[in-house]
Length: 480
Image (cartoon, rainbow, N blue to C red; front, side):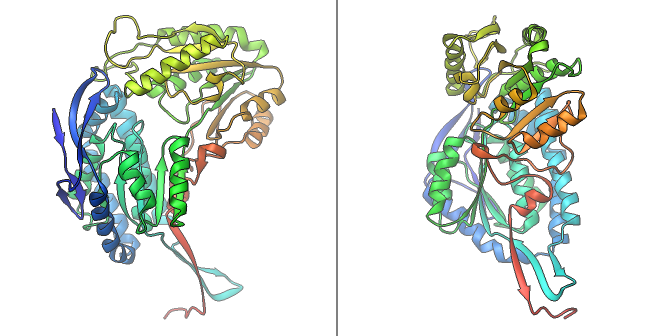
């Protein structure tokens, strides 16, 4: 069993001042795979103090030098790719091939895109020809507390840390206690890359401990949080006392509108997307809205696709889905599947209990419900497991109304060969992102939502702007 008790504070590995032990559980086996320490107030204070002391120097570092540091981080990150994949796979159950390609690959993708955005970003520019002595300066918001989830750890860590570094912020990262090992590897990468002391700090902890301490800390200027809507509300309330900036990337209940003229791969694509990462994605298309003419065939196909998916241990290579992250998630998903049955949805694939052949591990059967109505619990709540709800609709207006009838607004999806219809829906859907006909968002596109899916944007130029203050200067002396 791995012991990862240290924190990374002010450029060195530090033993906890006031921490307590926490066992990280391998969800494939239900056995402990590592021991970490959860920090206390003294650990948080030490990390925040280090970040505060490093802030003036990092803010004053020329952008070109900050970019050079990130280039080095990316270089080291690539060399540690297998270590990162193994950590993510064992701690949160991502199948190892998926961990290598998607989980680790997400970090490379975001760092590459941030480097491009950073090179093109105007941190200091004139207001306009009408005001030749006015400047607009973008400068770091300050010390940022970054709280990241367990489901796509390097995706979220790099979206926050790298954007913050570009902006000139210093930071304290608190990864999820469910998947902390990847963050320890990331801190090792930061150390090897030679980032100045105190710019990046890592303190492991849980939400009630280090998470709450960061949210309320008077020397933290901003909180960037990804996680549940419930936790996001608590963080926003806590942060209000010190009027710190808050950026929240929360849950989702994405609708995937499949029209009668959708391409032949639309249903299969939707099921596989929903089940990817064992359904543990906030932007998963978990509500499949199918136009009446295509409904019966879509239900049949979705059931067949789900039944064809294999489930297996995260350590095994190949294309399969792994376990969900822990017992709490497993039990919650089981309860929601049963709730779907009790409320009258038609179970066409999967169901409660572990898949055949498993009596241990947090494995969930790929599950599909048909004849779901949008008032059912499984259509309202974020299940965060491999569970798909299929809902019928008649007209474009009906489909749009059902899609928007949710407290969430992260990502919606549209499948139609009618370009004008697709464009109308893209404008009408109340979500931060809309993806159509299997087309993924491009490099540098912003990630974020509306309504109870949070506020703020991550990725590309918008991700950098999230960590910047805007300063208006008049009376500027040109060329001085």
